[in-house]
Image (cartoon, rainbow, N blue to C red; front, side, top):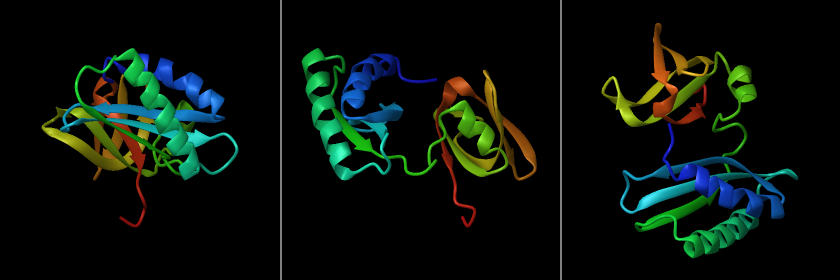
Length: 154
């Protein structure tokens, strides 16, 4: 499902986010890139997420991660805002956006692919289900890295 360091990183990031009055929307650690990419998506609790929010989170999280030394290899840290419902993370979002076009990215190939475009049908404890050109595709949740809302014009 996710990289094994994500729970530790989340545990370190949440108090920083709370102090800055923001919330963690998503954390992904992509080790298939060189260097590895640690991406943290944040949302302001007060409205729009600013560049200043991202910069403060980046600086403070980087300090904590370096002090704790939990990531042994070189990595790049990217802090950004997921935008309005770009990345689906909560049960509420998955229910609200059923029937909408999405892109599901997996960290490991499933049926020889790592990206699936289709209409969101459902998400349960085991699978994310899509309608891909009339065929139902069930992607195991442990393989899902990210589910992104797609523009209907694409």
